[in-house]
Length: 186
Length: 302
Image 1 (cartoon, helix red, strand yellow):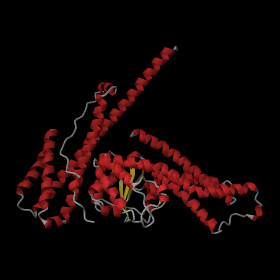
Image 2 (image 1 turned 180 degrees about the vertical axis):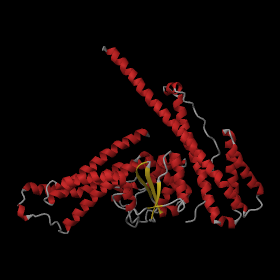
Image 3 (image 1 turned 135 degrees about the horizontal axis):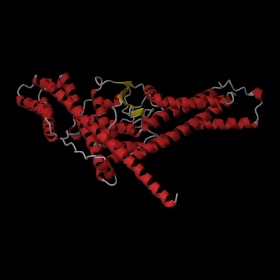
Image 4 (image 1 turned 135 degrees about the vertical axis):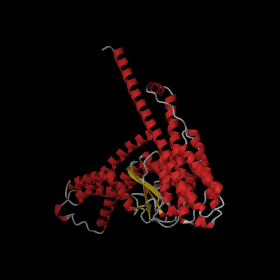
């Protein structure tokens, strides 16, 4: 074979190999995005499960806060029934705020604050809130990587050929972090 | 990050080969000493191979056992479990197993061969002194080690270095107390070569633990900065880890009973065995971790 043919063969092989590598990376990222999405879902569901319990526990002590209880319960069923992402995000934000208010209310009831069941629920919900935040962070990170890859050259050629679509970021309110955190007793 | 993982893998192989050679040399010298010829070498190489394979699959259990860590359930430690699970989600890895070590000095480490078989262990002292954000910072740092596969290097090195230290210490002691009965000194009339080999061997036995130390240093210091940064990236809150490190630095006077040379590099911060003002100048020279003030400073600059 003449030299120029060798060069052409080499170039084609290089193209094919890099195409395969890019394709595999796209597939991997898409899987991670999907996985991230289902993680968010798992944690949101966990929160739905905890809310009735929390409402019931707080109700036992704080009888005057009916409106707040109804608010949270209603937001919860709206979030469960929501079909579109923006609706759900809005309902989730309402839940987050509602839970925060519930815990604020609990501050006024020393008996409730000492209730073991309530303390366990508080830990569970705080944990779940931060897991939602972390799941969202992971999901959004992966979406960013995927969208960047789909948008930039030369991977956009591969992405177009195999119909990889850019994905949407998931924006819900971040639970307040850190500085206001209470110190746990030593 | 992926390049770092690949580079880490190459370094792992190199370090393990180095440790096996070291162990083989120690074994060879021992064999000569006990006049059993090449049996010592063969034995030591076999031991090294068994150890490195064993530590690949079971080193995590060995390390955990040597620190007397016990696994805790979600019911025992809900806060710790929630934090580990949350940060594993953020890192995109399966949730590691969670252990608590009965020590009052605040510290933590991660071990295991890959993210699918990983464990995170924290001391009781850590749990009682840290608030949620600080605990998140610490766990974030440990999970960064898991993601980077530092834990495999760390665990295998801990096992091999442990073996080298153990063998040479054992030998030095039996030699010191004149219990080296295998050496039938008189009846072999030993030539000059033998004497030289003995001299070299003696030097090697003395040097082996030091070489082992240096191997560990190669693994450790720079990786700590990296894990700090990546951990902070996971929690998105660098002050959390900074404040945890500050508390750990303040508590450095509390000694750790299970601290030893073989596992020092695994910990979040170098454990001290001696009660008192922490590290002396010699310890600093051979320290596995960068100074805690430097780590805090870098976190604060993020």
